[in-house]
Image 1: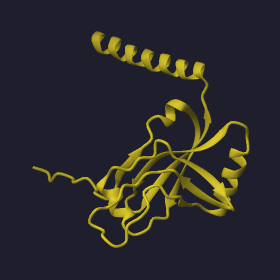
Image 2: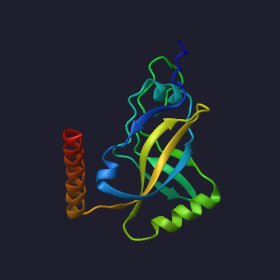
Image 3: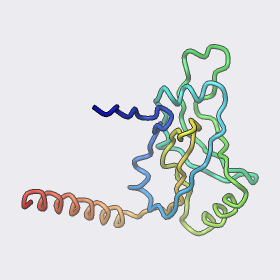
Length: 159
């Protein structure tokens, strides 16, 4: 019997913004690092992170993640972190310039899609450059999704 592959404990999704793809039309994505302090890494590994109401913004030539919630880590007694603080995102100057140019267009926003740990165990954020959807666009997306489900059922029943 072949040995079973164990999943890598470092490569793990911490939080996902599921409503982002419903509320926004994501045109492009960018992976960036997150500058964390003390107990935040252990709190992220424990779970409970929420990025549903968060957004990214460029201030003073730096990229920031605003309004993300990382719960307190109970085992860290002396050096606790603030749960909803601004966290600096790490991108190169060239990528920052491209982001500045992209969000300069009307209706574009930087939306956090997912926080995860990569193969090296570093916390990363998948950032989407997106345009807000209107109500009719959301209805069209739902209609398309329902049709895809229906097609799958039809093909499954015939096959």
